Image (tube, rainbow over all chains, first blue to last red; front, side):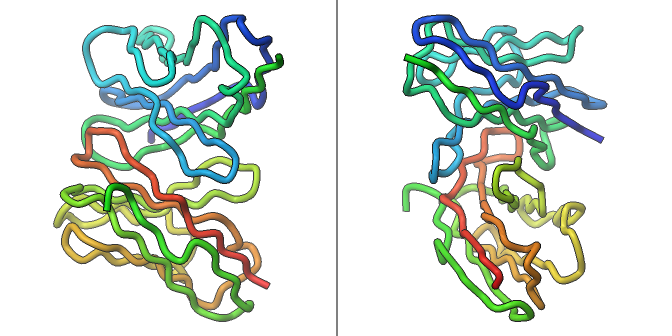
Amino acid sequence: AQSVAQPEDQVNVAEGNPLTVKCTYSVSGNPYLFWYVQYPNRGLQFLLKYITGDNLVKGSYGFEAEFNKSQTSFHLKKPSALVSDSALYFCAVRDGSYGKLTFGQGTILTVHP
Amino acid sequence: GAGVSQSPSNKVTEKGKDVELRCDPISGHTALYWYRQRLGQGLEFLIYFQGNSAPDKSGLPSDRFSAERTGESVSTLTIQRTQQEDSAVYLCASSKQSNTEAFFGQGTRLTVV
């Protein structure tokens, strides 16, 4: 069975500092990995994905994520955080090219001015 | 429409009543997903449709829950004999193919009183 873990319920960072939101996964086949962001009272928005190719993928709003097969991780990063990045972030995985998406429990990111 | 559309946006129902939630996916998207998000929690997978294949119903929590999809068009999620624990936001998403990112609707907020 596929699964995702986001070990931190909350991440706090000062504006201008780099941020990392952690995600680890478990699949039996090839992982298809995704990050989504949810702002208050709004739906989920797609940020970026890893399917194949370069381990470092870039996405919307200056976010990037690094796929690490040996550590089964897909951490979300941004070099310089903005207060407007404060939101709930979800990591998701699909085992191979077909089937359901499984989401982590989410990490609340708070960026302080 | 340009995005995934869900209706109604809010639904208040009495315990024991049946409710039907609707999802209109993005045109041309073959995959469709339903998730449940309880207050302050992550996304709980309910059901996944992919084209004309048999749906993955493994996430439906009880036989009170069912979902239908007509071809690659609209989907309805039905909850019979609603209970208070069914109160949540029900999210629908669609993707062009099963191996691409999913786009989410704004959700239906269901309150069972």
